[in-house]
Image (cartoon, rainbow, N blue to C red; front, side):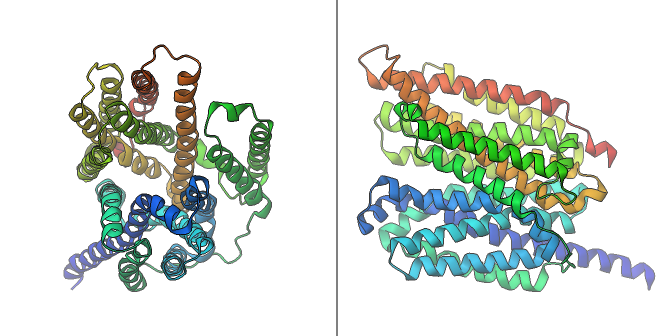
Length: 475
């Protein structure tokens, strides 16, 4: 009887892993799909509510702000109430926010719904990794998170096209309602299969630290969202806001070092593997978002082609990333992180180098480079995230959710700064260093110069992949 019970226990555990993975894939999938499918609706919202570009941009900014604020809270809520309870509550609130956004026809209600969706997303994404890690053995986490990452990238790829089709057939309110069926299924599965755990109700919350960090994030993102041209940089108000941002963040760091139960555990940065993975993920994300800014400008302004070509180029990159994420995760489980991440970074650097130095102005060349970039991302991005979380020692496993949230927060903030700086560089180059009367040619040269920066940035991250701790041999 004892011998026959072992396979039964193993099959039960495997079944639990599958249902947990399915649940978090559906939950975070609807979050990712909602965010990417909403971008095509901005022009229709401007026409429907009779608003300008600045107000319309807050549909995106509100989501990003709320998500950035809630990311640091994911670790605290998971320890206070448990990962299961926090995840299901966030998913339920996300569904309610979608209902509010679709039912009410005031622009204020849309902003509130988007902000609430962003807040819930900031909790759900790092909690998804925490839940996956809680039921998955270390030697299987690469392939499992690779499958989860594939789903994220595929929803990002099809989201804009789905959003455009919904807007053609229905109206912008339908973009909120398409989330509800998937969210309801994920709620039922989560209630049935997510593992229960006891939270620590005595967990203290660092309110002052949260205020410092939230103020810093809000000031940074709001200030960056209002800088549209080089002339804005000479405005004293922006430098004042950025100064307050730096000061409040410095106060937050000081307070975290002095707290016994900090909002963000400083000991995470002492873990070599997590620190290295953070460097790699930030470099890859900065390159990704800069590419998402420059490729549309190259195709639509320099080549004078339809936005459909832009969508096809970006979608092809995301599809390749999604398709190769799970094979890369399986390689990570079997052989370790260093080689696969190094190979992925080299391919990513090569794609940027081709975009920077190749004298070809052809849309198919750009699409091929973007597919090459997607391959590099798929081989290095998700494996580096998984390997970094695997680097946490056994007594630090309760910090997985916090570490995943920190990874997301750093990536988004650095990407936001990089995109603004890239746009300002193009504006500065056009205003001051214009070398010819051909504006399209100058824009093309400026885009290539920024791609040179992306190449160097990825190469700077390469040593972190080479020197990555070999967790595979340790395990």
